[in-house]
Length: 77
Image (cartoon, rainbow, N blue to C red; front, side, top):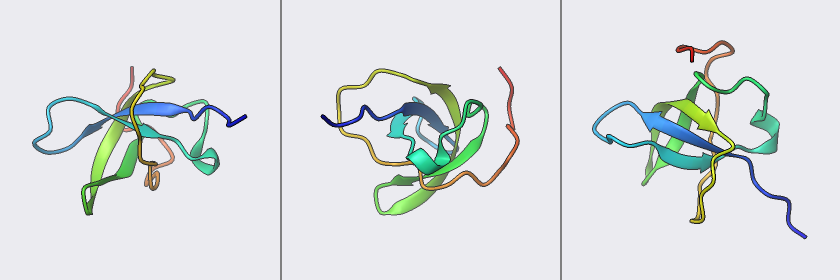
């Protein structure tokens, strides 16, 4: 049985107005991800965004978060 992926909603800096859903690779999982900046794939390029929510439900395919450039959140809830 395949382990369920942990998902995060990411608001991207730029022209996309709604959050996109990405899965969080095991090596990046942490209890305090909300507010952290992330680098994520968007088409053929990389985009900077902020995690706004974790443990969201989503039925479609997701791509992984590439990296976390910060150790501290840039926004708080």
